[in-house]
Length: 225
Image 1 (spheres, helix red, strand yellow):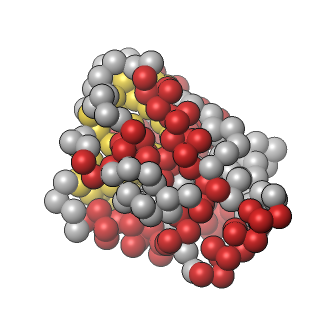
Image 2: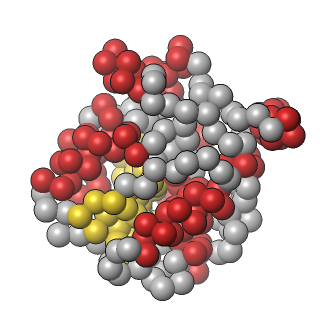
């Protein structure tokens, strides 16, 4: 039995883990799923740290997509060493001083900075993109539609504060084979070049925890501390 902390991605919420969390709990694991409300990366990192502080040492923390930025921030904040395993699930993999904006085209970052200057959020990606980028179709897309929410640009523009690399946690990178976004190929390559990482492929789309939770659970089970 393990304590597992699940960190959701951009525009999502704790709901994205519902099916997977239920499966893990049925297997006897204790599962905590924070729901990030507003704010920049630093805010999300602190919210994750608050959830982590309620758990005993030996936690497996899983970050999906943008949640990889939060996971890196959480590793930098975890001075007590509560995290035993850090799993990046088709996720961003920033080091200290890096932000999500460092990994996207300049014009995309400029758009986020313009929205921040206007006090406006980053809207959810158009629904026409969901099937290709996220694997959300049919009933999955219909369920997600009212639950997805805009993001504070600061989530994408704020760099990781501190140094996650000093943490001794076991690390893993799980790449979703059904995600065509080359950004995540770059993140998987970064992990593969780091001998601290175990790397594997998950047969599913980017939101595999929604579309194929049983496949995702099996992939995570191999890495759980």
